[in-house]
Length: 424
Image (cartoon, rainbow, N blue to C red):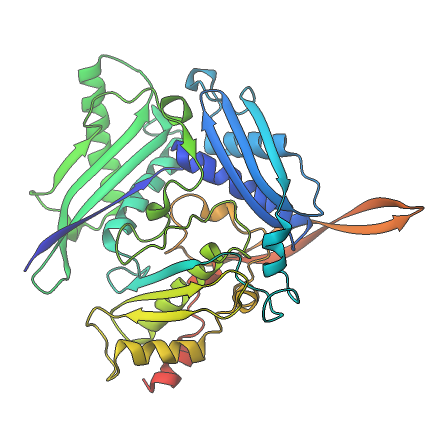
């Protein structure tokens, strides 16, 4: 039986995403100096104000004011009329030391089994599907593409010059009787804009531009037809937006961050957390598993769940659901057993396998943590050496350049191992 499925995305200028990007920028700044930093950074943004709070254990010395202002400037909040502007907003900080009660279960050599334990209990999910080249659900993939295109056009400043940073998108996909994507049923785009004329003419211009210049650039023509429904700024004008229009908080867009409602989500947010927190690192590892398994041909669709107890290194369970799409003559439970033999899911092993102690997280904080192209780039890092000098601690900062890998959990680097294990 055919059915509809909908997912949404938001732009980097959405208030919740502004908060996510600030939290991850703080995390990256600390990891760039001290790769062993423990960070749990939460951010709140509202009219003319940013509040940064949380727990950290680090040798890094960072300029929080500079980090926050540069992040806001990069996003595009650079005009006073937005009522939230990079160089004039107030910034309050309340970061303090991480609890030693938690640290004793996470530090290697101190946990129950003397290995680095999980930073918290909980369950994390990874998902993959053959619906798109990104191995992501089509509704979410298209939603991300729409808001990314809006941001691209806004920053180029040549077309659609009225665009402001805040935007949202939503795509509904119609599936056929076999559960395969058939067509785009509905597209919703709400974009903040300048007040550049009478409301009726202004909204007409925006709708025409979105339908003619944005949507065709990112959604394949074969999925669009004369029955596709378009809602562009359906409530009317959208001049007031961003943190002035609605306060933003770190971790309020976790479904946008992952799979758009397909599969499942454990509930834990990602941004602002270092990789000792398994609700981030294990979610990445679960995606890595699901993507490599689907790419290897084990199934057309797969959900992987992993669960932990705080302070314990080995997961308490690994579960697989192939939704009846498995191409191997094994039950989902048998597939899950093989997953455990291919992928080491202890927190330390995940961090080492995916290179998660590097400052790679700001890139993840908008347009989804999953379904992104892995890449490398040279990054300037600050390493801190601590020396004793007449009883005083002297910090010596060394600047070095290092090539880092980003979105490592998206690499198809275990496909051969999976094929070998499953005899594919």
